[in-house]
Length: 239
Image: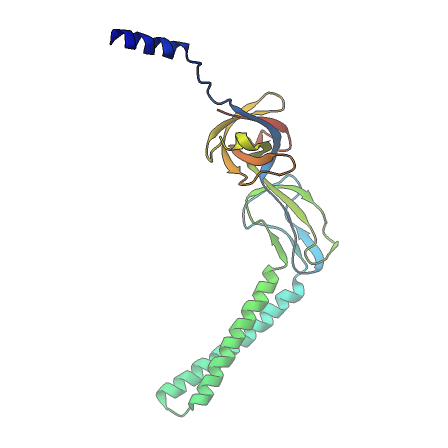
């Protein structure tokens, strides 16, 4: 028995050490968490610009707006029609309930005209709102493409808005190495210049490019105070 144990111990000692998987390292670039170019569905003349390039804006704030004077007058007109139809509807309803001298057809007509007037007023109000370019998220204006006085076509790019409070590292890793990565896995990102930040994997491509054999991977990291400017080259290391 002792001899068997000695042989087993010797076999374990002589067995080759199992090497742990190599850490995954990949080069790539940094990108803003959000980067969009904004436009408006309506055409018109840009009347007012509320912010300038480099300004921080909050979600829902108006960045610029088209001339909306005619649209505002239409809102006023539609509101007057709506209020008039409301008075007719209320008086018709009162007569019907108190004297029974109003037919159902007359009541239905008054009610329908009032509801149509409400809908038309809401449409006119929305058309005023649609002539304002609002920030869809909080961020920084990196570029304003047209200034007040310029004509804007439907869906023409007007403002570029970026959110750099967080950033992405984006790189491409070999397919076999990608299989060793997991979502939310902690990583270290070394930026061009030597700065190191902590992040976590937020996306791993489910497919591998057939031509290159690489899979796209993304990691998100905080950029408190906007100290890191997206666009820099970087390297990601995952244990």
